[in-house]
Length: 428
Image 1 (spheres, rainbow, N blue to C red):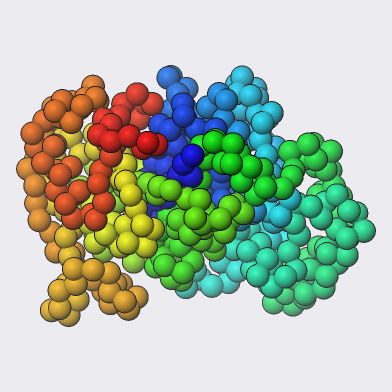
Image 2: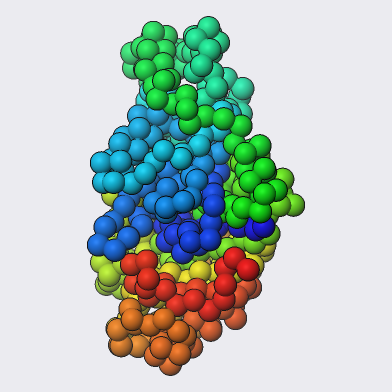
């Protein structure tokens, strides 16, 4: 049965949660395989809006087992705050499974993240300050704390001591902050142990066995292709693998078991944080997209940078991820715009680039080459078939599809669950 990967094909915030929810009726497991609580999904169910930061969006779908994979870094306070908030709203969270190999975000990771960003000043990356990067750095440096370590107090204390030997020197001598004690970190982490214990296991084994039994598993990426640590706009990226390859790395499931890769593309483009963004708008059009699309971060509340759709990065994402399908979201936000520019190439120092420049310096200085398409004024939120869309909206969709390298299989025409035009089945 299918192993389906859902990835963002831009800089994040494309609507991956809604795409996961679209598959919910035929999905048995939804796996978050990278990132932490530095990004979020907003899912609208009826008149209820849910903002998820750490939990997989599949937790909102009855019958689905949500899984936090080994590639995720977990802030335990955020985890239990989210679980309690959902429980209070009547959501069943009892099926959540957490990999024993996932790494833990501690208070010293959050502190280091914030003080490092301040220290960098104008060279800052624009992180969320939630300790994500420092936790991944500890993972790579082999001084991280994993979920399984919480169940062995002797090992846990040793690991905290080893980590703080270096970090307290940095905090006190470089950043002029107070030292962190072993006991305060130990006491904080062990306070979650009994609540955490029933959720933890070998999730890679569980997922493989589920697929052997014919279950459908959806792998849900945090962030997006252009924020991937290897393939994004480095150094203005996240600290994990946010592309389709990360689904195998971050879940413990073999790559050969991944059958489909669905890329989520917003009808325009947004970005949060620092870094190059060729189609960014600094005028009334950017404000219009931000206002009509309610472009503010689910996790941070930061206003998103907004620009026209960029088919160059969509083609790049299609190639990097091996996209089999695209879900185009927020088409309704463009309603009422008389002429809609679409970026089809870049120009750098008089040279045209139809594909992503290999040099980040070139990308930083890229000027978009636009083609403009006629817009539409009709309300499209009630459309359920492609033919229900105005002719110009249909033409816009087909134009993006032709230049994106993958077929468009669904179109978001509003924020609610049912406000979708489905062109192709995303499971069969």
